[in-house]
Length: 68
Image 1 (cartoon, helix red, strand yellow):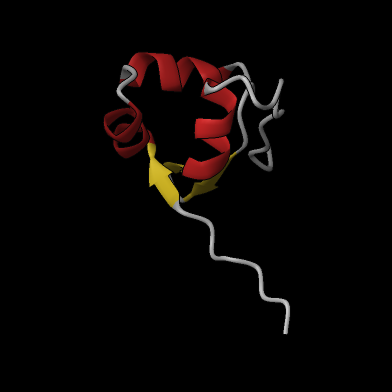
Image 2 (spheres, one colour; image 1 turned 90 degrees about the vertical axis):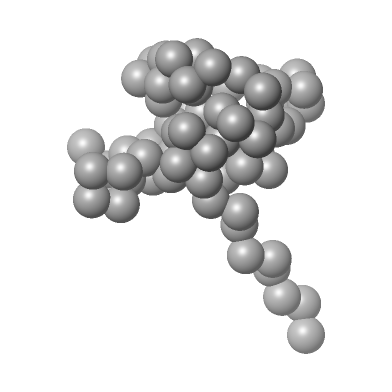
């Protein structure tokens, strides 16, 4: 069976702490829809693996989605 791994979703604060960037920087990326994110109620959740790839320059603009 070919199972996809469960994405490691993090809040803005958690993503910032785990990657060493500021919360402000992460929030700006979300605001400008430069990274993928989802909303769960009022929370913004970021796929940590995609975010790390973005920071490493492995992917260009991921284009954020937020169902607005």
